[in-house]
Image 1 (cartoon, rainbow, N blue to C red):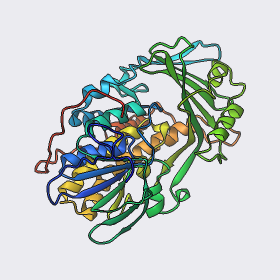
Image 2 (image 1 turned 90 degrees about the vertical axis):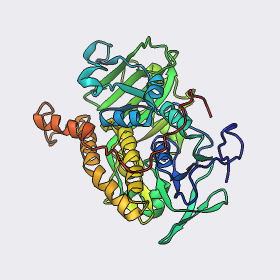
Image 3 (image 1 turned 30 degrees about the vertical axis):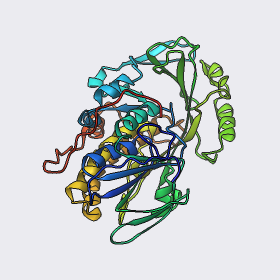
Length: 426
């Protein structure tokens, strides 16, 4: 296979494997957050793990992601609390502002015990992926620049064909390859069967910090058009992360056609005001532009035989929920634990994983849908928004943050990983 990562030189083709004789062999597709998090727990439970990623290396930057409630507990059980916090954005809070920059509302990072609008742990997706990779690289085989091209499963295993030409057999295959999961399409069916568009489009990219941004996120919402512009701090104080939301019920731009995506952003964000013209001025020179529809993934089941799904590939709750990373981290812990507790029997392990996760996922997806509705431009026949100050909403938020049990998995193998290395680029 191509570009197999090594301990000493990430550019060389040396394979690192762990697990004793007879250890289950598990292939994980995707090396963002869900995949390496799962690799951590699978390795600790005694599996021999391979992670394949179609990108040639880890992708830096990206949207800021959060860890709240039970997801923080998972990070602590991984032994990664210090490493994750060291890579955080150190966001003090958020201000919503009007077109002139006047502060309308303020949220602090310590609100709600660190589980509020700004979470206690706020970190760029790429920085969290780097922490997880650094934690697992010495005991997991990472294959960059390749992907699963085909697979055929039977009662005893899965034969996998890679785009690079290699053919290998695994006991289990897990898709952690995101909203547009190729593995999900290959095994479960076309994307349109499972994607639920929430009527919004999200774009983000880094810009020079020429806006005087300190440790505070700034957001301007235009209620009449349903558009939003945000600037948030990152660890590199010379730069900032810019984000745009805008309504689009008929989103049709190819998620890989960057030129068309940028043209769409210019068209839809024109005339917004506030700092938007200055943000748009850097659209062509940014190194990390990303745009996609705000969508959820809804499936009746997250496994088929010996193939399972995790994270956005299985149950994307959308950025509107603020909990996509939490779902990935918690799901990784439970999936590895339940498979190991079932003696690596896929039917039993996958079933118990879904049983534990389903209500937690549904609560977070409901939060995402409600937040998307709150950004819609009200029409004459629009239904009134629910009362978000009601007890029902507080109960829903509680389920979305802490509404899942983390078993200790006493009696299940748990081999502590190597000491956490300081973050380094692959």
